[in-house]
Image (cartoon, rainbow, N blue to C red):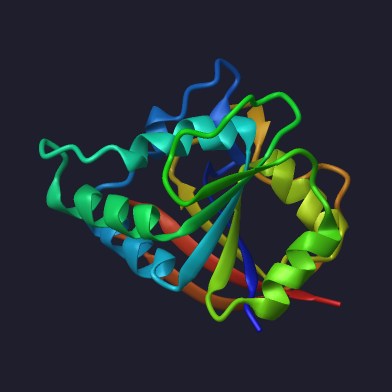
Amino acid sequence: MARLRYFAICSLDGFVADATGRFDWAMPDTDVHEFVNDLERPVGTYLYGRRMYDVMAGWDIDDPDRPAVAQKYAALWQRADKLVFSSTLVEVWTARTRLVRRFDPAVVRQLKTNSMRDLSVGGPGLAAAAFQAGLVDDVHLIICPIIVGGGLSALPRELRQSLDLAEQHRFTNGMVYLRYRTVG
């Protein structure tokens, strides 16, 4: 059975984007990007909402000007299946991608049961629905050494979820990786 993970790169105060929508401060250096690539290798299916899909769809384009580490990530992303949950998106334009009109926890449970590879939920909005449905098994966070003071929260505000720290790693650039398992 696959595990459903939530992965986010966020500020120290818990935001994936600042109040203006910017997240350039979260761009990983080569060491962090290699680490992220290793984290993403077990993922066979990505679950996205519309906005996160819009951000991630750029990885479907082969760009020879990308650094080698980014090209490796693009290859990982392109090999994975993608489900986009959106009632407003007309169509998807990336390979191996299916549009689903609404989030259905039963569909995700079935995917977890039938998949040999992990699933990853991307974006705090869809992650909130997955958390509320009790579907998230692991939380992967890379904390950036910056306080942005507000914006798009990495984690749902109303959620209460016990976690066990399973792994931690400190990078030379000041970023910190934390992996938690959900409890209960």
